[in-house]
Length: 138
Image (cartoon, rainbow, N blue to C red; front, side, top):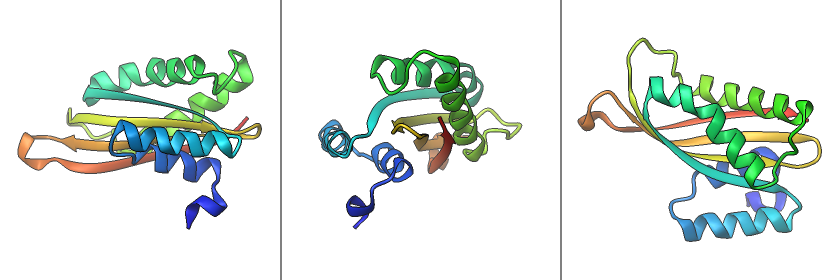
């Protein structure tokens, strides 16, 4: 099972996949027991709004939960992982899709990972799930 070989990457992905607060808290507890730092936030709206708010949402969650320190090296790594995660959501489409994402940030002393899981739709009848992921060394 993944728990035996838990990594920063797996931790971020699994945490972003959590279905409710109870599940989220169980995963966070497991991550903390393994020595990882973690944070969760949610962000929704049209993709244009999402792209405008994503950096402040992820940075705020990471700083408020002591996942990173407020220094250039940590911020640089977090931003690169976030950009990679957003790009893997395919948000470069010319259309303004609606999004609702749970975003997880997990780090150890060497790596930081950002995972985003949720739904996107051009129309309410076309919802489907998406996952975006990024990782960067600290």
